Amino acid sequence: MSGFENVKGIYFDLDDTLLGYWVASKKALSQTFEVASPASVSPAQMLGYWSEAFAKYQTEIKTPEWYPGYLKSGMQTRNEQMRRALALAGIVDEDRVTLLGDTYGRLRNENLVLFEDALDVLNLLQQKYHLGLITNGPADVQRQEIAQVGIEPFFDPILIEGEMGIGKPHATVFDRAENAWNLRPHEVLMVGNSFHHDIVPAMKRGWLGVWIRRETDVPPGKTSVESIPENAVTPTATVSSLTELVGLLS
Image 1 (tube, rainbow, N blue to C red):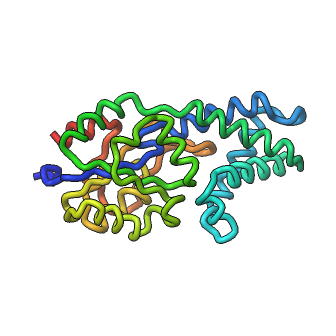
Image 2: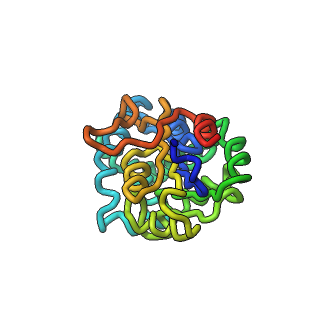
Image 3: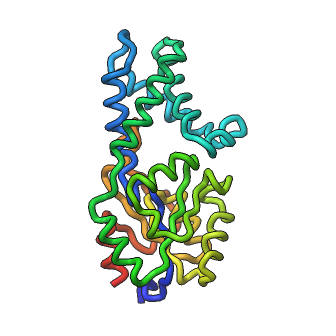
């Protein structure tokens, strides 16, 4: 018995689970730096500076200095990353910060698309299961993504870090998700690309966890997908596509 036969509700993560966030981000960064980099810095150099700034800044996002603003809007942190990238190039230019941040935000949105099997899978699963969405990120960015790819009607509830004031992997988020359906833990499945934010907290509370791993799920500056630490929990299953998920549930 796999345990999947007991599933009555499925929660999905959004970025790099249902849509290709890092693919869109990297395309947008390249396009942005091609058209809006300072004359003294090449697009390739700017991408390197951005990646360096991103690696450090991501460790600060959840601090009191940045987190309240981050929850509400992606603009503040998006521009701060551009500001820090320019600083690494020896440039202080607020007009350029705004130009780069706005250009990147617009181009990233334009490049966001669902994975090719996502709509078919969601249409199939909604006939049998409760479907919900749990996603981290600023309220405005996550809502924009959901609206752009047209998937809001599939999910109830939609739990967004920026709207709740707290995100995965906090237990409060999973309490709220579980209570929304009044299901028992073994009847709930979490599908996500983050081992630490999706799979570990879900399985600790008795949910099933399907870890979706794609070769494209690599942030700028990284060279490989996330790996499982030694002595960590083992996902119920690991897949490379949403189509494989359907096979597990069949």
